[in-house]
Length: 144
Image (cartoon, rainbow, N blue to C red; front, side):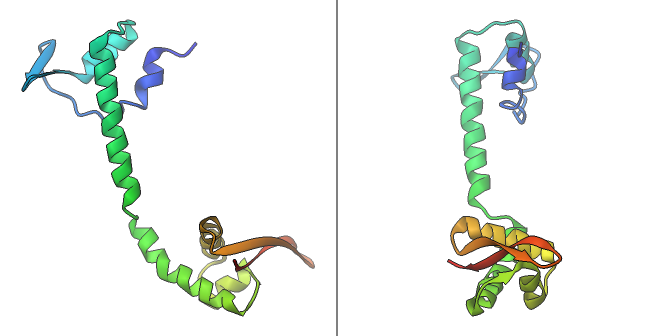
């Protein structure tokens, strides 16, 4: 059986701890519970209004942080945008295998495959399986 602590461990992983020796620290009009007190209460099975409020507050913080993180593209993602544009431009001439795209765009085959998969997910490209003599089945990419 999964313990309540295991269920909420991922939920409260990055909580800022209020350093205090008292049971609760008053911050304005809101009473703040430390992480230790929160997890101890969960382990002991003490599910009261304070515990539920703390968990709800932390879920809201996690959602806000994750929304901010997903809204900003990573450094690598920004670096890959010109390469994706180059791939789309290369595929204007017709359907090509990932290895052909890689040599035409002067990137590695694995990077070409990864970027082509991303372009397929975004709807810019389509993919189909093609049998290549001596190599088996490979993916061929073309403009959508």
